[in-house]
Length: 309
Image 1: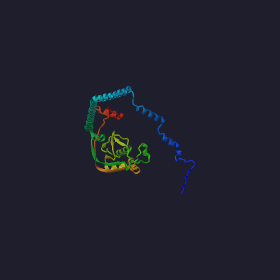
Image 2 (image 1 turned 90 degrees about the vertical axis):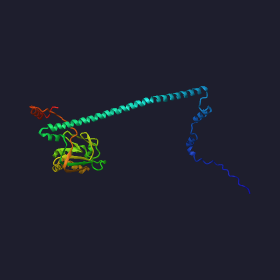
Image 3 (image 1 turned 60 degrees about the vertical axis):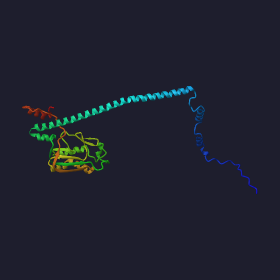
Image 4 (image 1 turned 135 degrees about the vertical axis):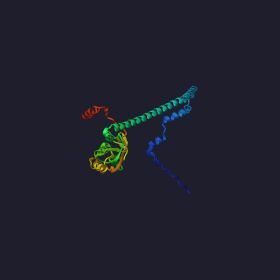
């Protein structure tokens, strides 16, 4: 049986599938530049880039020895100077601790002297206040007081992290539900106007020279920060003082804060309210008491509104 001869095609071979990617094939086939390949081959023929002459080898050895000597000397110097550096560091630490201790002691002395001066001022007001000694001591906050009065608690609104619209944002705060310094100023002034004889906020006694300010989001009373809730205690006829304050413009202002911004408030008449003495007193004027000078001094002070300091 005869076999069929193999069929030979005389046509053109089929195109390669990657014929359209000749540029990519060229990059893959010649990933390394020809110049780099020739340099690598030449370096391999010359001995891997190492010096071939004796002079070059000696130079390389001398360089290595010199580098090792420099490193060794640096390590030895560091080891020798380490104790000196450690001693200087410890001396500096001891000096800082000593100066800090001295500063703390001076601060304690200042507080002690300030307390002593305040106590002497209180005693002077009690002893030399004349027939109005008790009234002077009460108004100046020189002595602790107690009696009937009111208790007013003012606190931030719930969820004060979220801000809201309104004119209260004009002060720079984004939270309208937070009690501000101007709110506490109006509360205190309203209590004074309603007949309060003595006022304290969170145990901080207020006097005619007290200041209520803001530092960031904090409220300062005589430069001492307070945290909410703010408890205001006032000495006076409890029920009458409470009614007078709520009917006043400042009481209505506080009620508006409660209605519009959610600030929480509560007021109650108390049978016995205790207020501490003011932490410090400031004597603006002083006059020696002597025969024949009191009337003239008093008349001059009344006319000018000033005394001798």
